[in-house]
Image 1 (cartoon, each protein chain N blue to C red):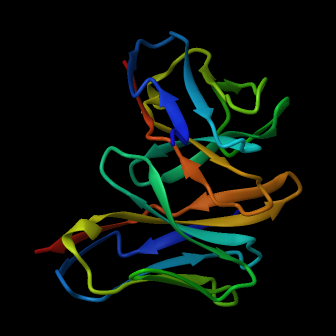
Image 2 (image 1 turned 90 degrees about the horizontal axis):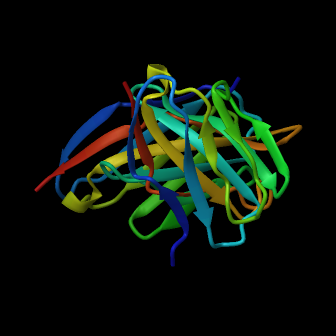
Image 3 (image 1 turned 45 degrees about the horizontal axis):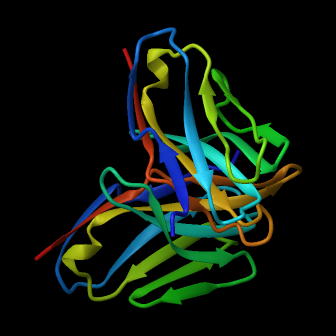
Length: 114
Length: 114
């Protein structure tokens, strides 16, 4: 079974700092990897989706990288803002005989201090 | 844009009661799924469907039932509620489980079983 780990569980940074969130997975035979943002009491919002053939994806101040061989993905947030405060989750998609199954990490709770 | 709509947002049940969590999407997505989110455990897949009339079990299916009679709707039924089913439930959909894999989530349904 695919195990997905996100470290650290919580992170607090001052506004303006660049930061990196980590996601590691045990099985490198992945189909894709997706990063989500979750605000308290809300659903998950997709941030970036990386297919297994890609190395990175960028959207605005966000950049996600994927290294399948080492079982790692990082989410880089540039010039952090208080509005970035949320929990960030990664989900690894893995093809099975019934289709693409997603395995989620437990998330990193980010607080950006004004 | 409605996206993925879940009802109810909050529900309190007594042990042994049954209920149905509703999920509807207006994006013509083939793939629909139900997750539960518990503290420290991440999101776990309960059931999923790759099209009308097709459903399959995920990681934690016991105590839950699903059906997919239309493309738009994917209700989750709790047959006899237990305190262990206290959780936040999320419905998610994707255009196709294999084509892109990008998941779109509803706002969640918070269930308490007494």
